[in-house]
Figure 1: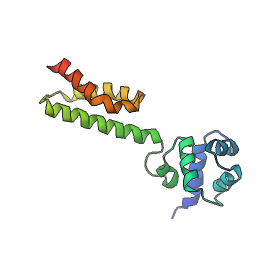
Figure 2: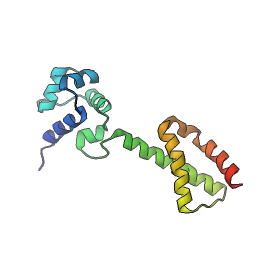
Figure 3: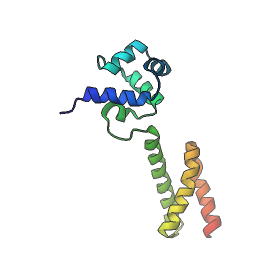
Figure 4: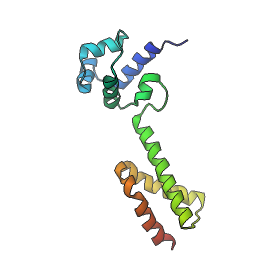
Amino acid sequence: MENIRDNFTDRLKIAMGAKSARAFALECGISPTGFHQNLTGKTEPSRSSLISIARVGGVSVEWLLTGEGFKNVGATQSLQLLQQLIEIIEIIFQEEDLEMSPNMKAEFICMHFKEILEEPAKIATTESEIRKFIKYKFK
């Protein structure tokens, strides 16, 4: 059986990156002494500390706690945005009774996905923009 505590401390060190434990703890808004105890496995961080550590370290809370899921919090968000975009495009194509080759559809999705990655809040306006683009391009 693997030692979960040791693996957790390894993940803490990965989240810290090249920063010193003190600098990282201060950036997280937690006590450097308490964080050192977390690093040595003497204590476990509170929920609020875990969230701060994950945010500052750029890792997901799930990965930090368990080693499972996506390490990079951005990957999780990116996949969710991609899924939303594909669903939007599929609905529009069904409603407009349009067909597109798989390669063209992939290019179409990639084109819009790049825009959304640059500005994630844009997913809210994407549907109307895609509808306008489709009507211009395919009608």
